[in-house]
Image (cartoon, rainbow, N blue to C red; front, top):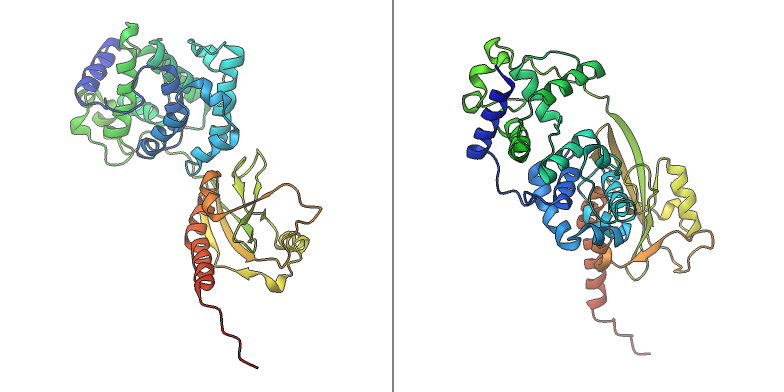
Length: 368
């Protein structure tokens, strides 16, 4: 099989059977870059929900660079891997400050942007600038390992480098073919050469696929060792103002939910008790809710929420890094997804009870 036959097969198949109506397929570097960052470790169906809202709010790289980080994180809330949003914001500022507002066109220059690695840079260069650069994400690795029966440890850097070399050797000769070729690699891996139950009868490489000929489709590529999932206990403190507002703090930039707003969060229950005491809340006055779980990549969060309404509305002098947010304004803040879900099920009930109580007629005083 020649290099050209693989590229020609793929391009022909993509034009007939590939995806052509994704909203970011407009050839503009900003749109391509945004979609590629969103698609990192995220399904297309999920990105299709977030991408239009993001583009509507920040239609240009300049508007993104000028935005407050809180606004960016608010739109990103629920998409996960929040370092992507922070890096996206930093990279927008880089493009304005270091590249005079123009997207760099070469892969090497694109890799200088925060959050842009080799494969992402190659995708931007290929789609937006028709550069002959190859991508190598999980879908592409699967296609290459099967079509060419490449067998190796996925964690081995030497093996990965051999896949980069193979991928580069397969590029079409004409630059104008790069968008269709690159999209074809993505589409083939995502819709046909799937990890489980691949649709080999629909694959343009079926008759030349070495793994198929060797009956090794299920074997290749080798699976990565499953990461150990550790359980991390967390404790939330939901402090409600007497007017119904909720006390929120901004999370540190690094760590879980970096940069988002959240209720005070602790890894140790005693730390929660100490913080609560600043608001004159004793452990006996804390209402404990059932624990909830939330899965991250390598951790399972076991979150136990506690809530209370302090008798005084005055803020402790030692507490300054936070703010009261009315229930109707919570949507303006980027909140962790599990907190959003918890509040939807609990805060609304609390507010409804309070409204019902306020609607009751006052008891008549007995005549003396």
